[in-house]
Image (cartoon, rainbow, N blue to C red):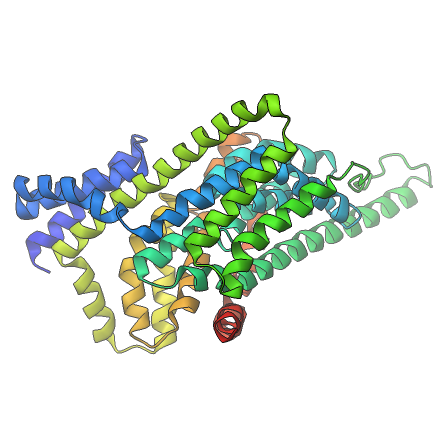
Length: 457
């Protein structure tokens, strides 16, 4: 890179951060900053051409059809009451376990994140409701903060995942294989989070019992000042069994057809959207059909437009990075360092963590994947396995202090928590994430098992 290119890159990054600081949409911030860089490097004419052509070249990809289809499927499922059914089912099943309300919150956050494709939106939506339920159960505000912030990252790997679809597009990897590859790590993450929450609750209850015994002994058995342990979540709420069955039908129709090889990812998404539409019509009374369909279409259009705006802005910004020589310089620097492959992998993954302060998962993937994927596949890492690792760490960045965006969103939605308490609550779940990432690196079969089995079938 020349000195002029380096100076331009620094100014563009400062401009981008400044636009974010004034709360301009991330997609527009990326686009304007990228266009400003193109103006400096190639002039106004080149910038106008980029603004005219890049949005079309970014969005005019048939494989991207899967995104609005998955979004429509998720929105219809929510408006049919299936997400609520899944949450109630989780509350009923998990209510008798230690920390039942926290586990139910993890399940609800995972469902919502899978539908919206946004961790930040999930935290903003679930923060107040989940916190009230967890605190009411006597489990504490710190656990509530950790559960909600970590739970928002679950939807990134559990199909249907918009983030995995976008990764497949920008990295030219099989979308179907990525969706199947995310199932194992997604389930492993759920188990890790659930185990973490249960351990925290169990330890807290032992401490409370010990405090109660000491207090009871000190006051001669009167019980004055005794610490009361938290009661478990009441699992008596009625469960919508058919709603849970319909959730399974949608999942099987969309992801199951990909696994069996009877449909492409786009066809499977269309089958899932059609199944969700039929299920919504079956579960909603006819007088409400028009209103529910209108709400669903409106919400789906908004989410789709937001996603494509992010893609367009990231496309312009990535074009500027290539034009400035930053992309090539990064590749040359990494290759020239002659480091061990796994050291390069860890260093590349660490680059994602600071981005969590400014960007959501979708934005991080759209910017980082075109840079990191070519470098790491050059070391003969499997592309599908690599994609899952990068996406997992990108979402982990959203809860990693001191820059985790989910923590800032939660503290804004629940002001009484305070940022320090939020990060302390998130700490154990970050350790769980580190364990999961280490397992995925050490045992690649957790990711590749289903894709390989599907290919063999």
